Every structure is written in structure tokens, then in C-alpha cells.
Length: 339
Ligand SMILES: NC(=O)C1=CN([C@@H]2O[C@H](COP(=O)(O)OP(=O)(O)OC[C@H]3O[C@@H](n4cnc5c(N)ncnc54)[C@H](OP(=O)(O)O)[C@@H]3O)[C@@H](O)[C@H]2O)C=CC1
Ligand SMILES: CC(C)(CO)C(=O)C(=O)O
View 1 (tube, rainbow, N blue to C red):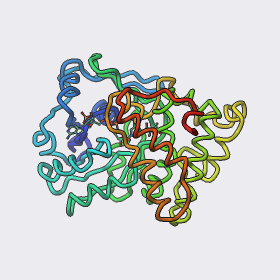
View 2: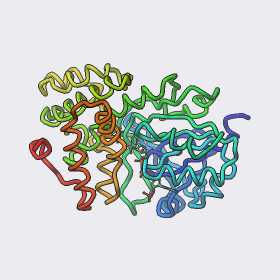
View 3: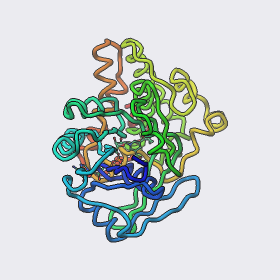
């Protein structure tokens, strides 16, 4: 079947789903968005604007996209299902895919964390389920603003598991670079190290670029990564580099003084000033965060391996508190985080 004939379903169209699906639709792929009704209505009323930090600014008119909140209608003809819900909704989405998609539909998780492909596999029987990793941040316009606008605010290539010929070329389109990797578990553990910063952005409320520019925050990230690397080493997990630098060197880079960090980490700091983190989005919208699948996964590993992880524990507790309070990102200082 030619690429243009394959139906790609975005299962959970939010920030990542609308950006990925938008790029695919703009490239002429047949895309169906499965969305909550507030997103479905926004796209049906105002269309979708897709921009990126490389300067692309593209729009899709209302009516030109296939968007629905009905899982049966969305999934019935899927050849490829891209799962883009938060970790907490993976099981629910797996059940919808099991109920409504054909048995030969290929399912790809584009979520953060290391456990989603396995969670999907556990509920999808013999279907082919592949792990994926999205390295960039997407900023979504505030609710109610039309058109719905998704902006890729940092760079990088999406990685997918190397188990289906032609899948990467189906998904690799303008604005969305996709390539395969033979060891996606190692990629996901590498991304998890980077994602330990999601909580710091959420707790500080700062844009990612400003937070990373401040050594006090980088030191907190460096210690969390030290704790995670010790737990991974003791568990024989070897994370791969994401975005250039070997994982073992990350804490060293983060500990550099600001002036030197700015020079050496130019690539890491190529981030739109609006970019924050998906965990910041969750606190901002009063939703549960993915802390249990990020810091929480490392804490479980550290506990089993018997390695210390006091700062990961402290950061987790602060995010849990902010989730409960539902007052948005608490705007903590680095000193308040370290206690
Ligand atoms: N945002 C980012 O920049 C990045 C995110 N990621 C990862 O990508 C994944 C997705 O994140 P993100 O796009 O930010 O999340 P969003 O919350 O923006 O998008 C997920 C969307 O799926 C919707 N949804 C959940 N269940 C269903 C359902 N049954 N039917 C239809 N829609 C559903 C959610 O609605 P509702 O909230 O109402 O349930 C939400 O609108 C996460 O694992 C995240 O960590 C990775 C890299 C960067
Ligand atoms: C910011 C980024 C790209 C890396 O931490 C991310 O994965 C997220 O926002 O969830």
C-alpha cells in the first residue's frame, strides 16, 4: 500500500498528537485525530496551525482534517496508531484500540517513560506494538484560542523501534524527522534522564531555557541524574545519549559555571523561550502529572538496587504536593526544592 493510502490514527490528540498529526497531514498522509471533544471542536471550528523553531508556519483549514471524539469511528480503518496520551491514559487507550482497531494495525507509543509499549502489548495480544521517543517539546495554545496552535519549541529526531519496514519513511515528513533505533529501551532510559528536568520546570514555573541557564537548577538536575545513573548501573541498564552527549557526561556539563555552560551547551539551549515541559502543562491545567512514571520509575529501580535517591524522592514529594493543591506550578526557588 502506498504511504498516501495508509490511515494513521493519532490516539489522543493533544500537544504531541496535534503536532505530529499536523505535520503528517500537511505532508499529504491520511490522518485521523482521536481527540477529546474540546480539541475536536476547536480543530473543526478553527483548523490547526503548526509552527516550529525553524520558522515553518503552516495552517490546515477547518474541514480539511479528520477529527473525532468517537473511538470506534477513529480507529476502525487504522493501519498505524500513534499513541500520544499521557502515561495515566495508556490502559484506557489500549482498551479502545483492542475494541475498535483491526488486528493488523501497528501501534506505536510516542510517550515519555519506559513502560508504555509493554503496557500496550499486555493489552493488545498479538498486535505489533512498537516503542517510540519524542525528543522535542511542543507548546499548545491556551484553551479557547482559535485556531488551535501547536509549536515545536525544540529540536531532535523522533526514534521508533526498528521492527516494521517502511514505517519510519511513512512518518518522516517535513517538520518531523523520524528514524529507527535497534535498542529503544536504551533510548527511553536515556530520555528518562532528560525528563528528570520536567519536574524542575514544573516546580519553578520557569521557561526551560531560563531554568537551564541557571546553575542552581542545573545542579539539582545533575544530582538527580547522578542518582538515576547509579540505580541504572546497579541494574545493568545502559541508557544511550539523547542529543549528542554521553549520559555519564551530562552531570559534568550541567555543573559547569553559567558562562561556560552557555558556550559548551549551545545546542542544548537552542530552545524557544516559550518551551517549558509537559509536566508544567499538567500542573498548569490541574491534571495529574507523569511523575510516577519518570522520577517514580527511577525510585523503584533505586529501591530494588539498594542505591540512594534522596533528591529524586524530595522532587517527587514536591510534585505530588503541587498536584494535590491544584494551584498550578508553585513557583519554587532552587533552595526550596533542595530544602
Ligand atoms: N508535550 C511535550 O512537549 C512532550 C510530551 N511528551 C510525551 O508525550 C505524551 C503526550 O504528551 P502531551 O501531548 O503533552 O499530552 P496532552 O495531554 O497534551 O495530550 C494528550 C491528549 O490525549 C487526550 N486523551 C486522553 N485519553 C483520550 C481518549 N480516550 N480519547 C481521546 N483523547 C484522549 C487528552 O485529553 P484529556 O487531558 O482531557 O484526558 C489530551 O488532550 C506524554 O507521555 C508526554 O510525556 C514527550 C515529549 C514532549
Ligand atoms: C521538555 C521535553 C522535550 C524534555 O524534557 C519533554 O520531554 C517534555 O516536555 O515532556
